[in-house]
Length: 108
Length: 127
Image (cartoon, rainbow over all chains, first blue to last red; front, side, top):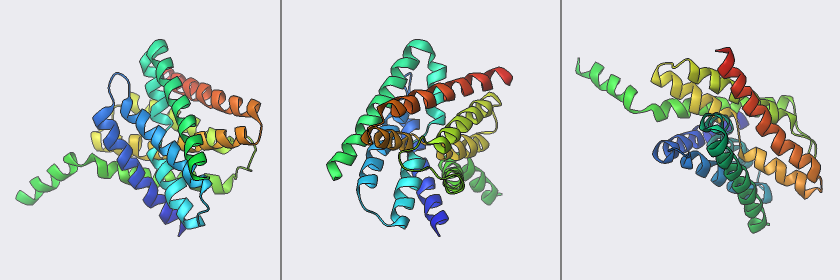
């Protein structure tokens, strides 16, 4: 049962990531940056909320996990080279951590 | 004839459905690994680190092979995108910081990024 909820959330989250990335990724991958930051914000909220195991599987592990991605982030950082890659990596990690902490604080 | 044409155009115009299918499988695989190798609260998140490094390596390998568009959608943004996660990485770092373990948090943030970039560079070399 939990597997199905993770699969559902992961499928929807991945589709959202793909559609946003397709529209916004450019020389700097703004779309992938945005979904990673938003998913981190949402997971901060999910972790602060006391959710049932099913709800956290669907929303946390499934949707937020599927919406965010480390593989595309790593490949894009590598492809952009030292200067733009560093900017992109610092922006992604800094904003995602801040968004996650903010989501957690706002809910708690 | 007509139905074949419609079917084909549906396949090529909706890569998002391939992404969703792959993403569902990738997220489930990540969940299963988390169940088999659980991460204790406050401990170094080895399972997520391994998932992100393996997923980054495999995505770089995949992209160097330029597969058919639907296969690429299924496996790239789908399977590997859904398998790896940046939200859990953020949340785990937040928890490490919250528990006062700033050193471990920095090690995790920098260690994951470095390991994933090395994995991508390696994959580009061995293609």
